[in-house]
Image (cartoon, rainbow, N blue to C red):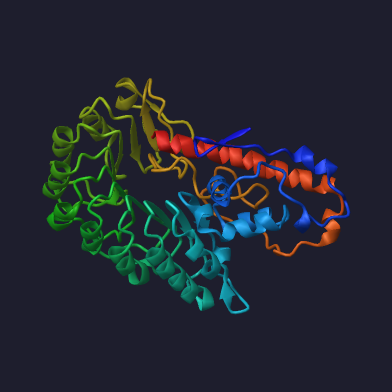
Amino acid sequence: LCQVSHDILVIWDPSAYSTMSSTLSVQDQPVAALDLPLDVWCNSLSFVLFSTDCCERLAPVNSFFLRLPGQVLSWKGASILLSPRDIEDIDGVSRFEQFVPKMHLCSRAFVNFQDSQVGPQRLAAQRCFALLVRQFSQITGLCLRNWCLFEKHGLPLLARNLPKLRHLELSGCDQISSYDAMIPVFREHPTLLSLRATFVPRASAGRSFSLAAPHTLMALGFVNFADSDALAVLLSRCKLQHLWLSASGVFADGMTRVISTAAQNLLTLSLPSTVSEEQCLAVANCSSMLELICRMRVGSPAFGSGVLANAGFEVLPGSQGVVVRRKGSKATLAPNHALWAPYTQSHDELLPQGSLRKHGSTKLTAPPRSSTKFAPSVYKTQTALRPAVTVVHEELAAAVAARQRRQRQ
């Protein structure tokens, strides 16, 4: 018995298949569940569907489940994943061209354009992102990875679309040439809550960038401020809880004072690699709410073994020695291995069971190729169907629990 959409109960009894005749093909076997309306089945599957590979896992159940992913409601409110496999050109057609129009009611998207910088993959990635931002009008969170042409082909589209966008994460993409390039995104998304991006080391954020930042912004990284005045303007406009300065940036004179006086709500803070442990402590004293401090430098003595240890901080386990945590806090690294993330599941955790991925890694690996056609000999007996149904049942329960945790946050 699994709770779906808070008030819908769906009973899935795999044992019912034992009474079915083995002479029936899998595609002709009826659904062993309550006779529910189509929209109820779609709502329940929105907890399970998150990639095009999920459709292949549902196809062997029967023809009814084969058709469900084609319903728009099956993707409503879902977190979806577009992998490098989805932009591959097969007989002149890419998978995303078939599925993205069906997914336009999803609420969050993880997109990986790894190895798409040359050849047909390059144009396919551009078409995919253009279709995505124009179709996904309901999306609130976008995590884009490994697209080296984002600033040229993606940033202009992003500034004109996705009106409900609240969280934007750019990881492994090309470094943005200037901070002013983000100002159109700020203007068109006045309710943006978090921005994570990387900029070229020589660039610096001035007053124009700080003045354009939405008042709602509560998480920002990774930024190299031109001076303490630009930082002060930003902190006066935004009640930041997560501030991550660029590791290669300059910690200008007066920034310690600015952070100490204007950042009382900080929970996590990342400082440039040139900052000393004594400076970290001075900044840490700005807020009793501060839980995690990061400094991207490994050396001797180890970070967190000096004055920070005496001030009640400890090295965070699993942080490779670059993050300290206030003693007594239960804060940990986010699923993307950052100090914080707007989601509780990383993109590789969304991959179906049995796909080729390394647990705990943020590197996305495309699952092995498989055909949507299933040989009848594989499903000759009714007992062969039970594992597939059981796996879908277990993934449904896990997905329901994950979405309820996100909704409580």
